[in-house]
Length: 357
Image (cartoon, rainbow, N blue to C red; front, side, top):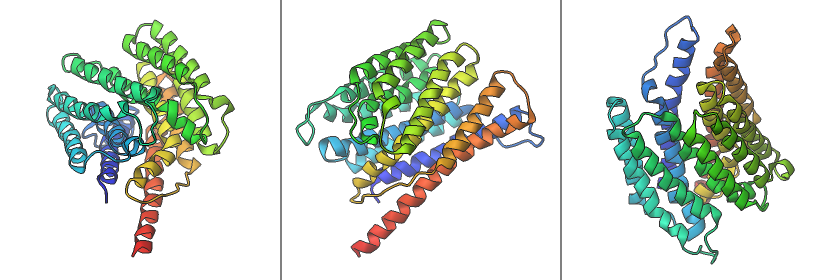
């Protein structure tokens, strides 16, 4: 099995360690009658951003996008060292939660991604020149490394959202076009949206942040062509829901910190992952010599977003016994998505090996 697949599995395991304690913690907070274990919850935001998202984004930069752009992934040893640095940072975040050592190791992981990203400034294997997403991707890594260094001295967790959110905006100028069958994306609008969203997250909790995030949503929604998109229904629905939560985040930033954070971290990021993963995972698996076809299910999307809606209602101050379902539903939605995906991936890979033999 190629290291790209191992990195994908590592990301899923990290997701479990970061997500399950958060589900239990929120259920305890809502008054669940029996105490639930919340080990690792103190490091929840770190595990999710600098564990799960760093791993899957690293997988794209080092493997999937690298193969597509240059014709080859990063060397195996390079990917393995990257994976190990991520795990070391997570271990330090759990053992020494109040120290900056975990972030120091994250800086090493980010530096590795930046170093490999130099290939994206060269012409592609097909002779194509670097495009908007090449430059924005590199800019995101540079911004993230400065923010991470800043966080070694200042505890502002929401700034960590800049990394996965801007990464999505970076690759959106191309990946959403692939998802919609080659549709052209207005990359200048996406670049402008990128800047507005960055400013919004940087100046939060100022009221002006809401305006910047709204402008980022407006330009990205129009630039992506989601409203008039054609092609497969599943990604259109998932990405439309993602951008609805991004719009909601502009409003929720004025109302509730938790609702604002999760509207982006869960609503925008995970719905986007759901929408594009079928294409990106195929790109990743293709580097191993196999081509697969993922048949997504609508059930995870429905469960996830019902749970997040209940969570938002609770964060806005409403109370109901029904709201205790919010955290479990979000967890089940995300978990069921990946289980369904991995089930199909490994089934098709096994069939491929049998055919080769």
